[in-house]
Image (cartoon, rainbow, N blue to C red; front, side):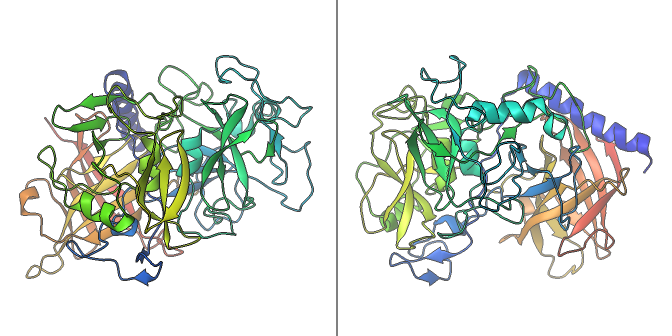
Length: 509
């Protein structure tokens, strides 16, 4: 493929994304927690239960929007996973770009805002964003000074760095990692302290405090704005133009350059009139009224797995990140939208996620204020079921972050057995071969059924490892492309599996 063809392909994606943002509420995904093991009530590791078995429905039973990151250089270009030096990190699920920390040597250096040892008091002089309390100013030692230093330096070529929201911080937590090491993928985020990191959110009940995420456990709590905590900056989403893209580089090699902040966007709820409510900002459907009684963790799992509501039977107990996505931190007692969820109690709700630091406990959200903590699995808490986010449907999709999902990939290798799979890929820019369109496989599994209902829309995998996608739906929800990819051994290094786009064309509607 020549450079003109590649630019045409990218332009189609860009235009589709612009159309989508102009008229459609995009369902942005909530990342997976990273938890891969299953546990019993006593905290023992067990083989993950099958449907119908006790304790089925816990976090590791589902892999939904697996966490995926890309290393970036100082100009925002993607690097290979094997790169030993990088400047920023892109979250491929949310589209957000994160600051890197350096020089973790136990010595603070406020002349370097990236120094991993620096801590800052919470301060925001803007009355529109500080929640009614500006916090504690310093001299180069408060959060406003920190953000200003990054933007003044045009870190990464951008001037729209900001404090992350509490949900954005939680979305990069890896809940499979136990205390006392940092609960984050240090392969992408080295020099992270196993400690508290500030968010931009003021506590709704007492504005002299603000929310923070604790990266020694994954918990979320409030801290006095007088405290000095760690900070990691983020960009993308709420800053920039009306469409959310950078004024400096409206289009770059990582894709559309358009990125909405999935955790701060106003939730667009839709009451379905059948006891369910859809959050169109995440694509998740929620049980409108919580379960009628408090339950143990095991009972909560069974309740959700057995729920038949709104004509759906694929309900489950939400992960801790999904449950947190449901919180409204601008409210208190309860921290939830009571217009769509009336009679919601300011009480603790179970998640499906086991606490890795003490596996006889599981995470939950306190809907009095929106905090995240854990309880023993034998205790009783409220429960609210969720559905959505699972791999479903027939049409292959390419979202605004250039995440490619193929729901049915039928193998042509063994015509007698004919297994079928689902597979996810992420766009992988290689600066050495800038004209190639490369997709790296991030997750895949065999389907339990062949997928006969998807016969017309299924993709195929041939014996020479070529993939044919008959109709790839772009982010505008309208445009389809026919795409052919082939396995590339040259790019499939360091345990990666990469495919290169060799042919594509617009499919007539």
